[in-house]
Image 1 (cartoon, rainbow, N blue to C red):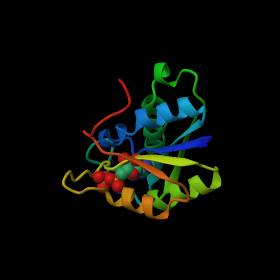
Image 2: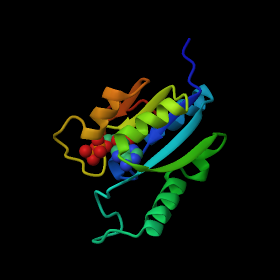
Image 3: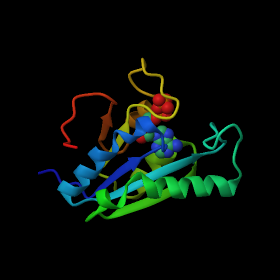
Image 4: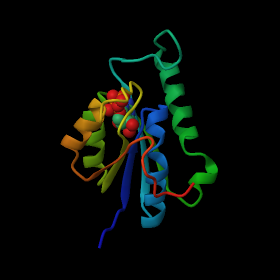
Amino acid sequence: MISLKNILLPTDLSEPSRHATKYAIEFARQFDATLHLLYVIEEPPFYAPLGGYFPTHEEWEAFADSGLQEWIVEDDAAGLTIIREKVYGHPVPKIVEYAADHEIDMIVIGTHGRSAIPHLLLGSKAENIIRHSPCPVFTVRPKQHEFVMP
Ligand code: ADP
């Protein structure tokens, strides 16, 4: 029997990453699992989410907090236990470390993220999360056969 108690949904708050969300929500609902939503603020910063300049520390925090809050809207979150976390550092080691520290049973990620290069099968972080994860990783490619009903 498969028992999932803790599911990790790391997101870089980008559109390609959004596709994984409904799968993570559905798995959490069906297995009555806690859903951990994790955003790693890249340090050193790799992109400027607010336009052409790199935000201050406070602006990053505000971007992360509102992004995490809005990522799963209230209607979709009904009945779920959701933990929203932001941490600083390199995404891959931070995601792997979080999974190990929180008894995560499955990680759900998008195959692509913010710097999506469509012809690549996997983004570099996706590949390295799969390589180093302490648990199974469920990957979701944009525009593939879907089994979660809208
Ligand atoms: P790309 O190279 O196309 O940007 P990535 O490998 O960076 O793709 O991203 C793949 C997936 O990894 C994302 O959909 C997301 O689930 C996860 N991810 C990437 N960066 C972060 C981050 N900073 N915080 C949390 N999750 C992330």
